[in-house]
Image (tube, rainbow, N blue to C red; front, side):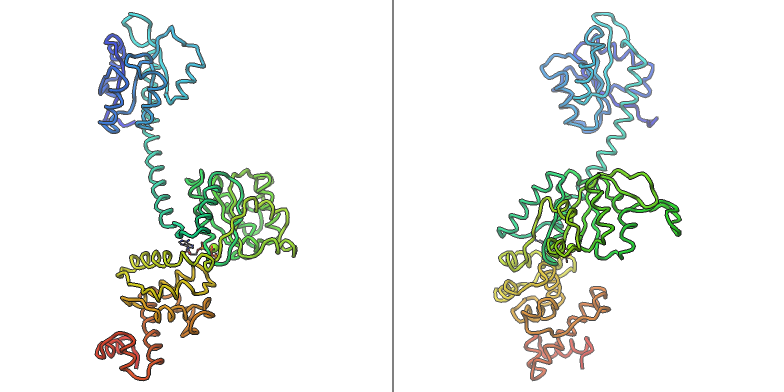
Length: 485
Ligand SMILES: Nc1ncnc2c1ncn2[C@@H]1O[C@H](COP(=O)(O)OP(=O)(O)OP(=O)(O)O)[C@@H](O)[C@H]1O
Ligand SMILES: [Mg+2]
């Protein structure tokens, strides 16, 4: 408790007589407890709390006051106005003192404590002055804690809102509308969900949306790519181990299941899970417990499982590569994400969305896309689905063209390994090291390759300059800048 500022109390009491009684009880502690305001009814109390926004720590209220709004209803309204406000109720000693039901109804409504006063006109202290004063101190401590908790929670919720905003599912096609509907349904419950769909269709995005719309949203969302963990490490990664479980286990390691406790575990590429890990996963789902390596007692966990696969898992089951019992446990609610070409009406919207997003990130002006260019984008095969579209849009921005034409789109599509079937053939490929370059360098390389490509397709410098939309002098300067002979 801070010693400088006394606890700020709002007293709701309509009898002058009872106000004096409270004052008298608090008097020896007036350095620490300050009655900041006294109001005669509930309405005035609520108005004052709103007006002084957070100024009161503790409300002391008489249980029965005039003015209609009183008792449990008033407690609820007070808590609704300021959720971390602590409320101490004063009742007459004769009324319900030993009545558990009564005390319980106050606590259920949100009261912190209740104290009794002498009945009638005995102008004395509150019945148990020490209890009363102690309860004010304790209420204040709770107030401070809860205020911090609520602040943290609000911050978390804001982060979630932002993250959901960034991870918005774009599209107005019937299949995306249906997907949204399924996400809402999945978010309402805790059932296991199996998301299937081709690479790049948005499976992880769907899982993310389910988690952050579910009651677990304040807990962890832990994505695991089952295909990228080496087989002999899967178990220790997922379930962890105790210190000394095996040679080299110098310290205990929590598994990802422990980290995800109370939250959601996203098992991406679940078909890649080795058989031993499949058995253990089944156990987690069936029993709600994990077997940590080197630990005899199983560990209770509460985890929501969302799995994803781009393989046909039923086929994996038929081929005995995936356990059938696990398959049924995971596939309680199947969600299938359609390939992009089956919702091509969403492509213009997605293109606009990614253009805006990347342009803002890269600090570029938004280029114009001609209708012909949009049509090429809309009818491309998109074997790599939304992820490929996203990459192509990024490339388009690298090219720094104010107007994106059909030719430019075709060229950008040609760079796509995935879609090479659809476009004019790959003009060039990035090497692995080029892909890892920072944006600015990569941008330079793209421009360089783009200009070289246009030159190779043109009969003369003049023609190339024209195709690039540059004056000859600018064209030569650009070639020189890019180191093109
Ligand atoms: N409908 C959509 N709206 C906006 N962005 C999307 C949409 N679908 C996918 N994306 C974006 O496309 C990219 C690929 O999506 P995601 O990683 O969820 O696909 P995936 O199905 O998990 O792919 P993989 O099978 O390759 O793991 C992500 O950047 C994602 O945010
Ligand atoms: Mg994925």
